[in-house]
Each structure stands twice: as C-alpha cells, then as structure tokens.
Length: 236
Image (cartoon, rainbow, N blue to C red; front, side, top):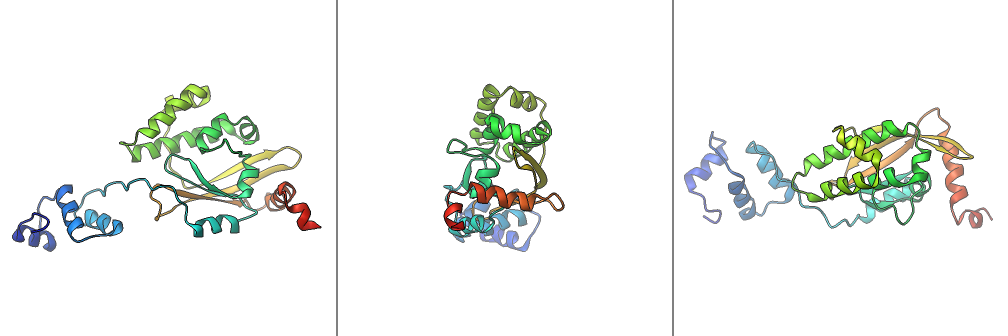
C-alpha cells in the first residue's frame, strides 16, 4: 500500500513471475523497504534492469584510505574521483609525477604539465590510452556535463589532446605499465593497478608497484628520501 502497488501484483513480483517492472516501481519498493544502496542495486539486477548511477560523493576520502596511501610509501599512490580530480596523494606520487599545488586533475596535468610530459616514456602511446580511458568514463555518466566541459577545455588548451580526442579512442584497462625518465637518476618503471572504492562511487585508488627486474625499487628509495624535506633530520 505504501509503495502504491496492488497486493497481487507485488506477490507476482516476489515470486519472480514474467511481468514488466519499471524503475519507478522498484524505486518505490526500495524507498518503502528502506533499502541500502547496495540492496537497491541488487533489486534492480534481480528485476533485469540496469541499476541507476550512484550520485557523486562529496569527495571525502576516508582516513583508512589515507593511511593506506601513506603506508604505500615509498611507492606512489593516489585517489581520484570520476572526473579524474586528485583528492588524496602520497609524497612519492608528488615527487615521481612532479605534482604541485596547481595539479588538481590527472588528465589536465598530463597534457599541460611540461615537466611531466618530458619525463613520460612513450608519451604519445600513453596519451592515447589515457584519452580512451577518459572517454569510456564519460560514457558511464551520460548525464554528467562535467566530462564535456573538461574535454572542451582541454581541446582548447592542448592541441595534442584535441587531435587524439577527435580520433574517438576508447579504452578501459585497470592494469598497465608506466615508465618515467628522471634526469640524473634513471628510468622508473611501475606496474599500475587501479581499484574502485565502493564507499566512494566513481572514485578510484591508483597503486604503483616497481616493475620487477628494472631496478626501480632502489631508484625510488633514493628519489623519495632525497626529496623528503625531513630526510636530513632523520638521517642526523
């Protein structure tokens, strides 16, 4: 009654009979039964419908995740939201990816940070892969205008992005390899793994592990320790 459904029809729904169910009906049932987001999604899947996209979170990264970032040192790690805005980053990632206070978005920095661009090995291949990933993300949120705004701004700011964007690449791997040439140090090669954060819909945790046999472990230790403002005090 609270959901505005007939008893017989609701019984058929629970019995899994072959009836047509709309998203409005499922939302009414979820509201009355006070379902949690995961339960609401499960209800949609049982009914054979695509679950609605979760609303964007407010971007508060849990303390447990922040502790994970710090515990990942001296390896790089960071958290981004659905628009690739950086919400949390550890010291190693700041050093390796040459981030500063103006680098708020991974995609924007990749195409506009000259220092980082000079360091990336096989920049053009990496750039095409990143644009493909961003296009795939945009397709997951067709009603979110921020993706279009970001793409338009980058097309105006970066001819390289505009050229690749016009080629319509699409990608979606969660694992890959990144190589960066650090002047005076050598090449750092990482295996990158991206993991979703269920408690933050659309957010992802990116963890970088030194690739075996590349000597990145030792180089990374030197780079992070030398660049740490407190390293001299620690050594003393």
